Length: 293
Image 1 (spheres, rainbow, N blue to C red):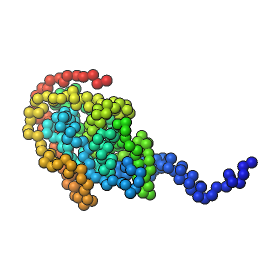
Image 2: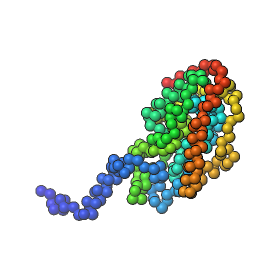
Image 3: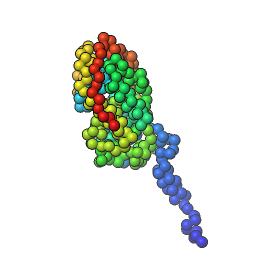
Image 4: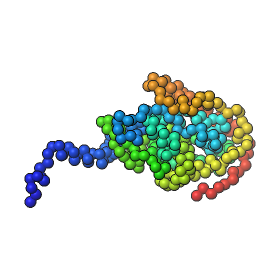
């Protein structure tokens, strides 16, 4: 027979047990099924939380080597891509921004969306310039689901700031999806650079289609000469700014104003993208095919 000591629990012990159960199943609770990227941190202490900042995901170091290839395979006209669009920005804490900058982690679209993006880019790669599809027609500007994946072997532990202002450690692969207005082609291109940098093939459901897209950028470069002999490339609004300035945090009022202004600018970009793409086109030579399997 069990002694009374074992069958009688103090109220404090019961609360402790409930706490332990709730922390091990925190992501089954509806409150944690969707959360902001601003809740993520590498610090276990609330006092050490880094500030939230507006961060440009895909940087010039990646874009400059494949800008024309990105425009071609996304179905844009030469000069249409705007790397300083709000579609290439996210809001995260500074320590998470550092991980993204170093490409130790990546924000990747869902496997289903990646499969569609892979098929879309293959079709634009294999077809002629006049048969390309515009990315915004197939992948409209809206919020998309993303997973934060570790790419390097030395990623720090990750913590989530919950609704009670406590930081709880969680495995990267247990994170619920993030809803972001980040455009998936920017995210996949950034992730591709990360997988390449770290020579990583982990999470093949994501790394394989992203690797194929990265191969397409390389195999279409240089793009057909007639694609680049078009009107002068459109200047990007941030071309004359120091890159560091793009990642400085902004105030709530600045963020609201910029969002309203940027929303109109994105709309003009989407509506104007690809308009000149099919004007005065000439027959394009068949691209050199590569083994993408």
